[in-house]
Image (cartoon, rainbow, N blue to C red):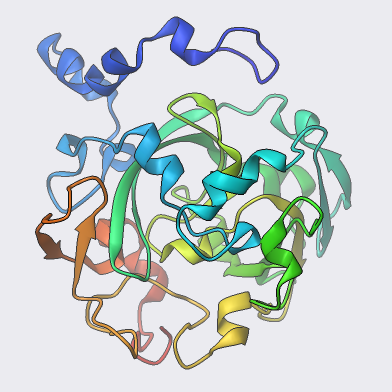
Length: 302
C-alpha cells in the first residue's frame, strides 16, 4: 500500500476502471469471500452490487459550509486549504491527552477500504469508497477513561482559507458529537482517502469522520480536535435548529424533516430523471447498529 508520503498515486498502481470492476473480477476468480459483507454493504441485500459513484461526482457535489452553501462551492474554493502539516488535539477524559501530528496518528494504522452508502438530509445519496481506519483504534491509542460517555469533534476554523466562515451562516467552528458506543462501533471510520487516493479538500481533507448509518452532516470534516466527555456535547446543526436536527440524526424514513419527507432519496449521478428509491432504516445498516438504540424512542431521540 502506498504510504501517505509515497510518490506513487493509487492510480499509478491500479487503473480506476479496474478498481471500479474489481468486485466482478473477484467474483469471477472465486474470491468473493475476500470482500467483507459489512464493508461492502450499501443497501438492503444488494450492497455489494451497487457501483460506487465516480470520484468526480463525489468531489463536485458537497455540503461543506466552511466554503459556501452551494453544492459546488467546496470544489470551487477548497484548493486554498492548507492540509499539511496537520495536527489533532485530543483531550478530555483520556489517559494520554495531547496534540498529535497526523503523520504520527497514521503510523501503524491499517488503512482499509470501506464502500459505504452515504445519505444527506436533503434526500440525496451516493456510494463512496472510503479509505481509512476505525475511530476506536485512535481512541484506544489515547486511552478512554471509564467516566467518558461521549466523543466531541471540532472542525478547523481558518476563515482566511475557508471563505464560508467569514459569514454568519453557522456558529463557527463546526462541532459534532457521538455517544461513546457509536464512536467505538467498527463501522465508524476516520477517513483519509477516497478511491485509495488522498481525500480531496472539499470532502474533508486531510481527515474526517464517516458514520454511515447517520445523515451526512454528522460525519464532521477536517477534524482538529477530539474531546472525550461525560456530558452530551453540543452539535452545530442541533444547536442551530433543534426542531429539525437531533443529536442522534440516524437515517430514519419514518421521521420526516419538518420541511420535507425522508421516506425516499435520489442517487447522485443518476441524471435529472433518476428515480426516487425508498430510504432504508439506518441507511441500510440496521443489522449492524440497531441494537445500539434498543429501547429508545427513535421519534423522540431523532
